[in-house]
Amino acid sequence: MHVYIYDSFVNQKQFDGLLAQIETRLTDLGLNGKISRLGAMMNIKDTVANELRRGAKTIIAVGNDQTVNQTVNALVGSSIPLGIIPVGKKNNSIAANLGIESDLAACDIISARRIEKLDLGLANNSFFLTKAAITTKGSIIEIDKSYSIEVMEEGEINIVNLPTDEKERLPEVSFNPQDKKLELYIKTEAKKNFFKKILNQSIFTFNRLTIINKKYPLLLDGLTEVTTPAEIRVAEQKIQVIVGKNRGF
Amino acid sequence: MFNSNDGVKGKEVETIIGPSVKVKGEFNGQGDIIVEGMLEGSLTTASSLRVGEKAKITASVEARNGRISGEVVGNVKCSGYLEIMATAKISGDVEASALSVEKGATLNGKISMSGARETKSEKPAA
Image 1 (cartoon, each protein chain N blue to C red):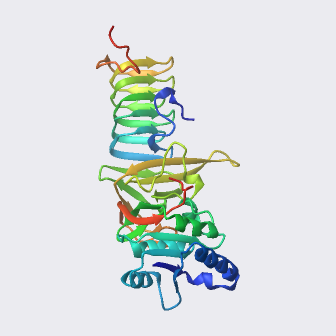
Image 2 (cartoon, chains in turn yellow, orange; image 1 turned 90 degrees about the horizontal axis):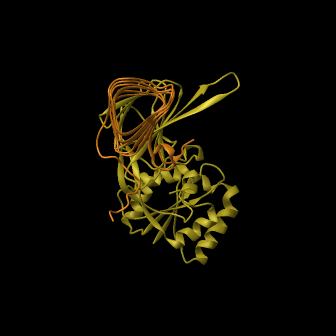
Image 3 (spheres, rainbow over the protein chains, first blue to last red; image 1 turned 45 degrees about the horizontal axis):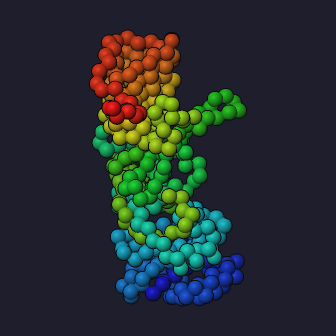
């Protein structure tokens, strides 16, 4: 049975027409299932756990990146695949990178059922699908207990599993959420002169990384804060996701 | 920016140490490495190494092929081809199977040519 988890924000009036189109398309494709609407009393973790107990065969997150992130954490280690129907123009970069370009196209992708096992990042006890980010200011990084990294300029440190920003795609480096590795991507801006700034980029591939910052937390998937020190490693093939043909890996 | 002349292939770089980054410790890699920042300790890779003009390495360095344009304080060892560019400053011993040194490079140390020479293709014996 397909279970569609509707995030609370999709209940807004502006999405009524879109949801009707999506539901019609799903019916045409023979993908009818159960709709579970989140609200004040129901969170994604409990909802997914209940539906898995009731025998759900596919869990589909209907919402945005936040919906996907929370559903991923609820499904970690399960053999039940995750589908995504992105709703809204903003905050749907995860779906885009998985080759799910639009809300209605997502229905056909679910029907095609192209399932891939993806790695996740694990920061202390929290999983992330796309990246963990922190400022360079005050951050100390130790990799594989072999070497440490110090960043001399202000910028951002990203631990990337699945890149969501086109600027994170250096042509010389491939990011792949199936390569059993995470990439440390550091970007800083140096002032060349008053008008011009240079973007400096660094990339490291690692198995295990420790990051310490006394002042700022680590942000997972742009949503969940994790205090440091944080030990980050890859969790290999921890989730199954229904992906599109035009995915970025 | 990246071409195949120095052995660092466009799509296969494993590590880039950018200009604003300092690495301390033992760095071991398998893929191509580009150093534009600072490194102290040791650096080893089974593939190619490129050291940029503004890079500073205070470490022993070992790679299959290398192209050095910056400063290295430490020994450099390449099992294949080592290119020392005009802006390079090396204070340490250098070992390679094949070596080229551009005019203007500074090299203070012993040079030894050892090991089997790597060739792209070899004609079979007649």
